[in-house]
Image 1 (cartoon, rainbow, N blue to C red):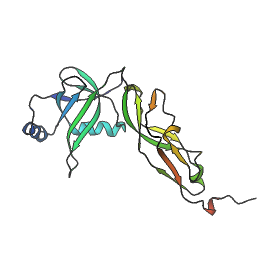
Image 2: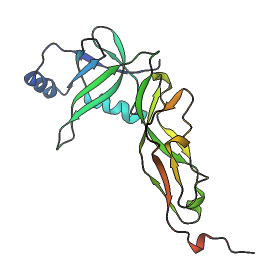
Image 3: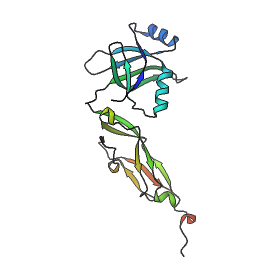
Image 4: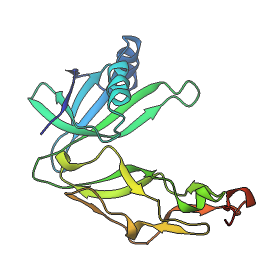
Length: 193
């Protein structure tokens, strides 16, 4: 499984005082956990974590973290940020296995020029992510949806999305993802010859 290395240091002190010391040193406290196992307490460099996600543009990037008890492959599940400065304060990572599927939210974007846009409409994104179940190595950075056949007034539902190979869209409700809205403009209607 391809994974991006993230440097970490194991920590043995816990609580608010220990967390303040870690942050004063330019790092943040973090946890690596897995169901049924004791979490690994580590500290990481928040700038390194931010840079990894900026470079990959994938919120589900698999990270290789050396916790002191071996390298674990993980996904970032939660972060805590300062309410004013938005500075990272804490991070949680979930350990993944190559043979176990994950349920993750994957960003969705549209490709192609819809028929409705050609005649004066606008594309409206109603959902920014789709819930996907896949093995860690099959999780896409983004799901592209072809909207070329959408006309004014059309909606594209989750059930119409064809996910990449190895992925499955998991929804209990067939919600709308894109809508083509607006009015047909006279300038967009081709003149009859």
